[in-house]
Length: 230
Image (cartoon, rainbow, N blue to C red):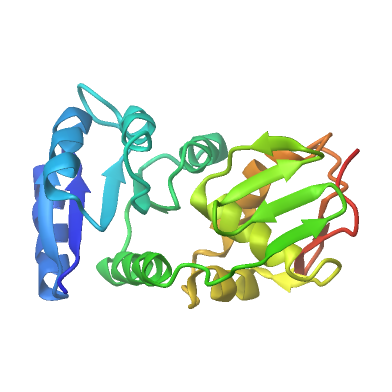
């Protein structure tokens, strides 16, 4: 079945270029020029994935994510010309799954699209729950608790935590985390893992600046400690 992609950007030339690229790859493409148009297009077109610019008139990408996440959990790739870390952190924290900084190659964007659609097509097939000390994760309801306190996670944060909780103490490289989270590896996406880890720590760690739950193994990757924060 043909997948539908919603492109949202106020640059007409970029919309046209990306539409041509994705159409040639076999996708059905719909587009919007700002966040307000995108809300309508998403409701009517029910896209399988959204490629979203951050800085737009009328409604920016952040506000679109906030409103859209109330209705659907569509995979979202952010397009941004900004290089500041906090801009990327904010977008992923609000529920975006990936980001790509302008300028970028069409091949890289297509690879990111394929990776996210692959993950959405093959959700984690688990029936058991995971519990590591005070951390509890329920696959079926996608519920997470820290010492009995419910914590709201984005889809990417949930999937990342599920991988780490599946093998406490094991060190996962960024590439391994990508493989397990989305069934494939996309070069250039590794640093997005770092941002997801940062956001996840802010939600489950007692002191995110001195994490005791998700540990960094420098030069290798990340691991879940045997016990979460008190």
